[in-house]
Image (cartoon, rainbow, N blue to C red; front, side, top):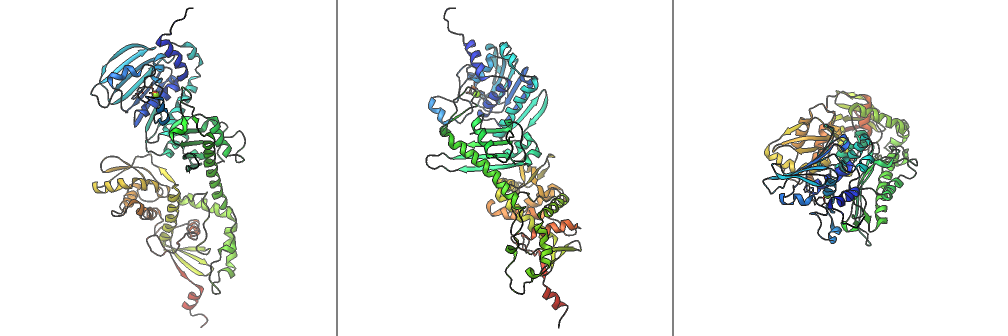
Length: 596
Ligand code: ADP
Ligand code: MG
C-alpha cells in the first residue's frame, strides 16, 4: 500500500475506539454534555442494553442552529480555547471528541434548540455520513438518539458483554452522576420501564437512598472534613457517606469517588478508603462509599485519558492522606460514640454536691437504681423496646451524657398525665408532656448541631397551603427547616410539598399536614433564621411529644425518665413550664407531721 491520508470518517472511527468503549460510554458522554449545558433535568432511555437505542434528553442551553453541524465534527468544542484553560476547567467535557466519535460508530439523530433561538435543528448522521440536516420545532434543550451502536465496527460489537451486564454499566453511570449532581433531576428508563429517578432535592443522601436503598443508607456514616490550606498544601474538602464497618461487600465496585464533580476511577485513592478500614473489616471485604472530593482546579490535570476517568494530581500524597483521614475519622468517631454507650458508668462521678442532708449516696436505693446503669445491656434493650413502641430514635451511636438528675424509679402514672417516680431524695411527680418535650428538644438540637437529624422521606406527596405572606417567610427558612428534618419543596406560589419530616413526627396522632402547619406557624417573623433554630426545634418537639391524656406503658415511662435524667435542663420544658415537682423526704414528713 502507498501512503495516503486517512479519511475523516476513518480517523473518527479509530478515535471513537478510545472514547466509546461500550453503550455506557455513550451515556456518560451525553450526560456530561447535558450537565455542561446547564440542564436541570436529564432523561436517559435505553433499549437492549443500549445496543438498539440510547436517548439522552436535557433541558440545557441547546446548540445554536449554525453550530450544530460543527459540534459533530472532531475537536470541536465550546469549552476550551487554549491549553491554559485546562488548568481552570469547570466543565466535564473539553476534548471535543465525544459527539464525533459517537456519530462515527452509530446512527445518531440530534434535535436541539438554543434558548436564544426560535426554531430548532435536527441532524442525522449514519456512520459519520450526513443523512439529514434541517430546521425543526423543538423545546429548548437537546435530544440525542443513538441507534445501532457499532453497527459499522463489528469487532467492537463482538466485545460487548451480555445485555444484562451492559445495562448494569449504564445504570452505574447514571446513578454515579446523580450522586455527583443531586440538585439535577435524573430519570432513567430501561426498555420502556422507569428504573431510576431522583428528585433534584440537592441532597446527596436522597440519591444514595435511591441508589443503595434505605436499609443500606441507615448503616452509612456521613463524612465531612475540610483540610485547610497550609504550607502550599491545597484546601481539600471531602464529603459523602461511607458504611459502618459492619456493612461491607466482597467487591470494591461500591466505592465511588468524585473529584470536583467528575467521577473518576483511581485504584490508589480507592485503596486510601479501603485502608481506612484497616483492622475493622476483614481483608478482601470492602465498604460502600461515596465521596465527593473538592479542591482547586489547578491542583489536578484532567487531560490524562480520552475517557476523562483518570486524573493526575499535583500533590497526590496530600489527596490520598486527606481522603484516608476523612474516612478513618468518621469511622472512629462513630465507634467511639457507640462504645461509650456500652461502657460501665463510674458511680463516684454521679454523686451531686449536696452535703449531709442529701441522702442520695447513702441510700440503699442507690445500688438498686444504679443496677440499671451498670447493666447497660438491659438499658439498651429497654431503649429499643421503647423506641419500637413510640418511635423515638435515640441514635444508638451517641455518647451517653452526664446525669443531671438522680436515678429515678418509676412507680406509675396518675391521671394519664403525670409519672410518679421515687428517687433517693424523695418523690417526683413528672409532667409527661413537658418532660418528653424537653427530652426531644435537647435531642433534636444536638442532632441539628451535628447535622444528623433522622428523617423519614414521604412518598405520598402531601402538600400544604399557606398564605402568600407566610410563603415568603417560609422560603427564607427552607434551609434551616431542612436541617431540622423538615424538607419542603416549593410547589406553586403558596404551596409546598412535604418531602421529608423528622422521624420523631411520624407516629404522632395528628395528620402530618396539620402538624407541619402548626410548626410553620411558629416561625418568628422578626428574627433571623439563625435565631429561630431554638424556636422551631421547640415547636417540633412539642408536636412530637407524648400528650397529656395518653396512657403510657411502664417501659415508655421508664424511657422518658431515663432520658430526662440526662438532659441538660431537666427541670423545665423548653417553653419554661416545669417538668417535675420534687417532694423531699423531709417535706413529706412535715406534711404528715411525723416525729413532732
Ligand atoms: P466536548 O464536550 O468535549 O466539548 P463534545 O463532542 O461532547 O465535546 O461536544 C461538542 C460540543 O457540542 C460541546 O462543546 C457543546 O458546545 C456542544 N454540545 C454537545 N452536547 C450538548 C448538549 N447536550 N447541550 C448543549 N450543547 C451541547
Ligand atoms: Mg462532551
